[in-house]
Amino acid sequence: MPFRGGGGGAFRATLDPKRWAAIVPVCHGGDTKTAARLEDIPCWCFHGDADKVIPAKESREMVQPIKDAGGRPLYQEFIGVGHNESADRTYALPDLYEWMLLQNRTNR
Image (tube, rainbow, N blue to C red; front, side, top):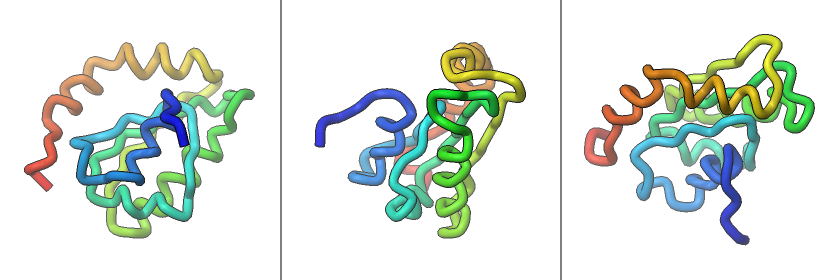
């Protein structure tokens, strides 16, 4: 299957979890059957609750199996925000970049 970018691409980390230091899925879901493989990968997931392209429910449904497996994914939902606006809001968060710089594969 070809690589697809965006949030769906981030959730494809299930294919090779040891390769990634962290993932930041924005506005996308993935295969909930394999989501538990992400339990050891720091994940900060974002979605807008007004997304008409990909419902926020899809991100919520990916985060839950990670939690159920013992992972500690972060989930942030933007109220009244649609699909493209979510990415704009996410990438404007200074805390996101600080968080990303703290992640590495050897700390797990």
